[in-house]
Image (cartoon, helix red, strand yellow):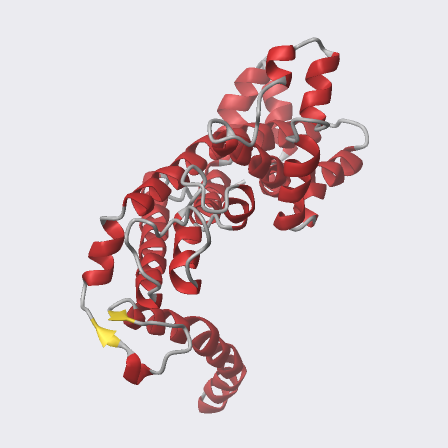
Length: 305
């Protein structure tokens, strides 16, 4: 028995060491840094100045941080509706026996294989461009001049334009998860329902949705983590535009310095790594709390099929 335990410990040791070095230590160090005023990321510990909860008070009272929280909640809600609506629609179609489903599945997932930076540049330069962008050209050809004249990247529309672009690039990922969940449901259930005269809508609401409960919970948690850590699209679409700033980008500015022009730190904040660390801790706590709440609202069902 001792020999078996020793072998198990030997095999687990590398994973535990990597976990401690890559995840646990940085997390604990970031938590400790959030209580200090740190002038630079390369500052020695002797240069750290303990300020207690001052960083958290400064951050939570910042108008830019509060605005960034509102922005990310909007991304979570609006983006979630867009993504899950189309992801579930595509998953349902691709599991209905449509021809060429492998091709269509690959095509829908294709945007996920492109980096977020490249995708954002494509949307900004070739789709939202007011002179020769795809949307402008399509609306002009359809005679919809009012829509063609919309400046998608101005302050009035940039937030919603960013959400739409990000959602387009995320649909394929969640579609694959939902697709796998639907494929797990035995076909016998649908055959019996058909023999009993059930309509497609009845089968959808009585069979598909109930048996996808666990999958929905998982995808919702994954989407929450993705939305709360929203960063690249915020940086490429709006830079320091308060309409697109998210907590992740606000944290980046706090840690790596002031940007030129209309910086998110013009509310009086200074270059302070500790303040950025406090934002990171708040993001982590919010993500954990939201994930726990989702798991609480959608408890795991022990369904056997």
